[in-house]
Image 1: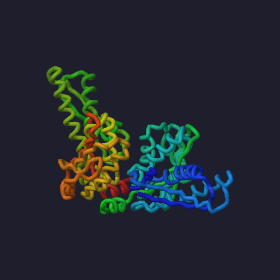
Image 2 (image 1 turned 90 degrees about the vertical axis):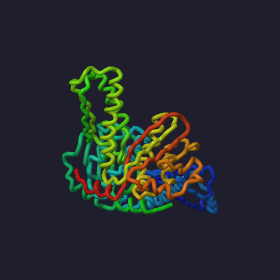
Image 3 (image 1 turned 30 degrees about the vertical axis):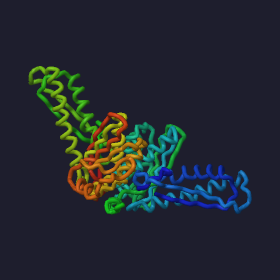
Image 4 (image 1 turned 30 degrees about the horizontal axis):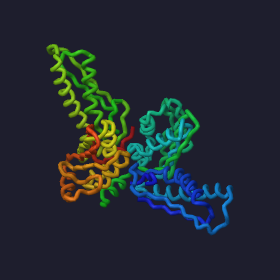
Length: 216
Length: 216
């Protein structure tokens, strides 16, 4: 049951920086948006996720430049914590980065990324290290987003375009990418300049075992 | 990979009724809306589902009353075929009717029904015969639909309301309902007069096995 929507995951980050509550809130929201709000195990949102950022103020007064550096540092920590949740997902054997680029809007990119990340068929293919391009293309197509100009990559290999499997692609390349414990599915929509990244895991026998046996 | 959106499932229904192409199309759309478009195994829409209705015209001219009867008959056949797909879903051990009543609109009711039917956590609980009310309530709540006046039933037993587990409910009742090969989850929203029904199945080890081993 993991797909935070900043709604049972509790995360605490602390800094000695001396920054205002308002600045801290802005940093926190930005960091959450690029970390915890970019992960999903199964699409089921848990009910009381929290991310808390505290600053002791023990350090020197933060300059504007410091604030930028602090935001990046907090985001890095938050992203590491968020990704650890995915790696620890029920029965997870693979850590998959789903990156959608050149969409019309960030919302569109996130919709496509989550469609891939939530598809049970795609997730069981991840588990099997099966480069089943049809399942990924179908998941993208189901969003209704135009995939006429799509370029689909498994790690650095161009595997398919909107018109089907790429002529130079050999399945061994796809299998090699997907056999790794971590790989990237990258969908370039070629219809805009927005992008989004979602981190997810595969769907294994142990996902069913853990969630069928666990009682609340 | 089964959640028809009348887009690899091919269904053919034939009748000897003598009706016009226009009347037949109307009957077909009505029947599809109440059968094939109400089932889901895993939310992954297959890519070339088709439902074809043919009339030989060998029978006598259909009266207006006949048309109503024909629509019901075609819908019954279509529903039987559609439900057979769910019963035959990858690794399915349970056939579950998800019924949502008294919503504001049919669209809202379908959204809630599919939220329950697509939740991997709910589906693994179905497999385990585990009346995990929190998972069902969380799936409904994730839709954003107000569940303040909700009444949730497992078959005929009122198990929970918007404020939590019902005081008279004993877990043995929920387990008894869910151990059956077929049962109904009924969510009464008490905020309107619309309703919708979706038929689905559970998520078992064999779902993962079948979809991880199957290669296209």
